[in-house]
Length: 198
Image (cartoon, rainbow, N blue to C red):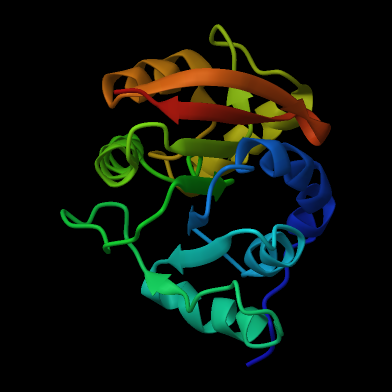
């Protein structure tokens, strides 16, 4: 099979890196939930050499992730793990940070809840959680393109769709996270930076 490719990953990887450099500066291992094609995993491992990057995704996506990872010559990119956020027991990963990009809007709300439960159980006090993607604010779209994208998502899967920031914040707080910063990103996206409280 040929390597999977996402143009969106190519477009957003550098802006995301600029935030992660700071957010994960004191972190030694990061679990990426929903690695997708694997492009982010290789790029972040290459540009964040101080940490071990752990890719993960559902089983069907792992062959493509491995194709990208196998081309990486460094020693800080770990073998991809199988992870479904609805698993009762997540894999045991000694991560001080978790990163996910463009995943919450393709999950059902029940899966989003399962994601936060898993993240809340895995990260230690002081652990960092960074979530990238589009969000609505006060029930409103931030752009016409996001509105069109949301309609596309819901036509494909009625349980998916762009999530309201306020709902995500409430869910994050209920699982022990405090918002450190909401980073505005290109193309009407945001990167939400959270810290696990005691």
